[in-house]
Image 1 (cartoon, rainbow, N blue to C red):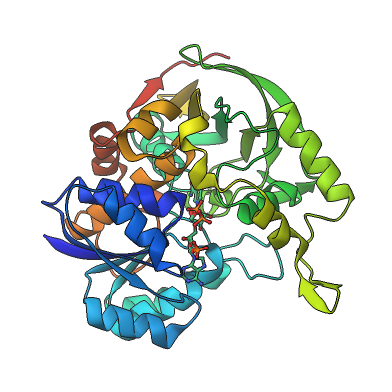
Image 2: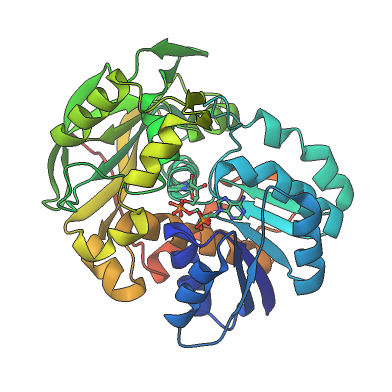
Length: 395
Ligand code: NDP
């Protein structure tokens, strides 16, 4: 039994807290801390067991260290924003606590999406005898484990990987993002990179699309190729991959709004002077858009996220598709959140459980595909994200 400190009380933080609270045999004590403590108290009021709440500025290492030393958790679950990854890792090292997050570090001034900054902590975590688990959400997270599971159980060699993330949900707004708008828009407007024959190939953002029909009647959607951070670790850890791509579905209305907002400069990340005040356009836009945490009651439909892998088994070529389908309204009924936060928060809870139960615990900085996928996959079925595998998949 263990104590966790969860940092960040947004859409994902709410789900992680609910899911940890459902498992008192693992998560005996929970502290939820964030910049705005009222949001922590609001989440705490939805639970049927007491948790502690606290206020913290996660950009401030001494403040974090003081909180960790006061709370004495076994693990810190970082579901604040990617900007806080390094300060929280520094605080964990100083206070001697294990660390987990769901998104790689990003500096505020460049949308770079790379693991280099966090992989650079490898020796520090190893020497301290501590573990940092990076990217334990859905994508990255479950998709890394799906890839490892497919490679382990269905292939001798894997050659191509297509991660396909479809959100067939509708929240009824002309434009809103399903997770933090600033992070979402930085990701979608970044240049596309995919892995091909030993290198990343760059193409303009959203310039390649195809139609994809999801299984189980979720529907047919346009999916767009974009860069996603798990590609970097997956091609490193599966060096036999000749091609790796990430695809995400977007509706016409979302894309039209994004194009116009981009054209008028509202998605910019450089500060502009307005009446003597420095304003970052994308941060101002975030202020105007619906809070992702408020989309839960309005969102209907299902998500379908999975991995299509080709390769060789017993000398024969084959294709395997492994996916999860998640219903927005069922998520809301369970934890008062839509499926995007749910599909991120559940793997964060499971990653934490893997560490606290000792199944994955080992010093150093790790991406999920480097660890045994089997216990994680078993818990996906058990805790709300059941998956299906289609061998000999044909599109
Ligand atoms: P939200 O914006 O809804 O929540 C972020 C929370 O972090 C807010 O409570 C915010 O506080 C808090 N926060 C921000 N800055 C600080 C700070 N300096 N100190 C303390 N708290 C802070 O985001 P989401 O819940 O949608 O996303 C959370 C994380 O999950 C992000 O890193 C995102 O990239 C990641 N994610 C990962 C996915 C995956 O599949 N791997 C998918 C979706 C998201 P306040 O309320 O005061 O603003």
